[in-house]
Length: 242
Length: 304
Image (tube, one colour):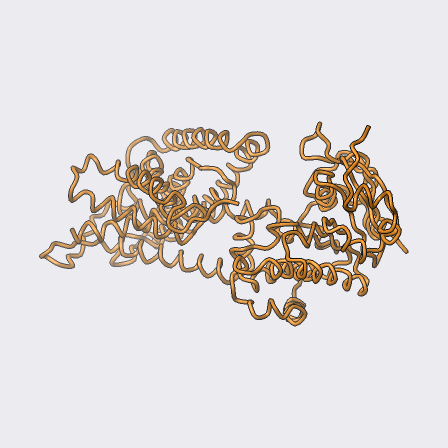
């Protein structure tokens, strides 16, 4: 499997002298679902944001299909084929569902119309609400709109920050299964998740972060059955570092 | 009474144009720009210069468009002034606001804007003198629409009102029908998400200043058509424009339009009850009332 996206030895944070991430490395392989898990404050979301260009990277490199893109301009990531779905506030509430899609499709030119129609067919729940303000959508519908906005740019890589946060277990399962289904079409997904067990069951590879550093990584199935990982990160109490 | 109402509507259209630009910049850049009204002065004086220039170069352009006192030269000058004022707003942002934005907080921006206002006002005063100037020295008779109650209206005022409404209608269409309009709303609501959705933030900031500056120039010229222009025009209008913005709710263009008319009408109607010396206090009172009763304004939303 080729590496679609690789972050190597990333040190990053909002304030220059206060790094949240220290030498973190993750790799998302082409067509795989890679998840990042870890306790609150581990730096999972910061890592995704650093890759997307929203948090400055002070050391380390991010490469996309072998090309270095460290500290990219966030508005150019879409053109490089990378979509980012933030955890919350991931749609524009003051715009209608249709306008949200039109906004992300505005650089798609002649193709915009077809892609818009395809997305509304793919997400029938959104088609019914096309003219409604996105702020009036339910949590699950918002997540689907956010995913639809990401898919609008035909991405080769999607970065997702806790897509199941705040959703009912059923809606969370649907969103994660949708992510899994996307990888079957060759899309690479790097996903941060709190729903650890659900995510591990669906994922190919998993990274565990804590305190802004890599802890463990491996095939998701192995981590799911690893007793020590299970005790520390999957429900058991976290052991305080000595 | 009815005369005051009509005058209020006319002043209101000018305030609305100023308030639209202010509310956009305040919402997107998150600072109260006290130098915004100086853009009206820049616009008014730029139009004065080009009006004189065109009239001197092509005397034919100096003919009036009957029944207005407005000449073809001034109409052309208005368009050029809108573009120039928009460009000035961008330059001011590059020179001052962008640098302060990168280093300081919101409060630094507010103080910087006071400084910018003072510098601009005095540059205009030094260049053009402190005396008031007129676009047209001809006396234009007001039309008597009614004698009892007495209602007078100048053709220029009607033109200003119609032109202001037309500009607002065009802006409305752009904002509600184009993806540029969506992008503008998107940046105002959530700048980070707008960026990852492919919106170039810096380009949007430039466009906001161009729109705000262009509208302010139009407001300045329309103000000059029915009044005089002088270097303290901005100082006199900054408060009513802020009142209009706050009444409408920061970030809401429709709120700014409505707020402009409300403040214009209220200030003029207040003249019926209050001695005219108190007139400048009315916008203050309106700001206080709105902040007490409905701090988000008529159409404002809570910040996320």
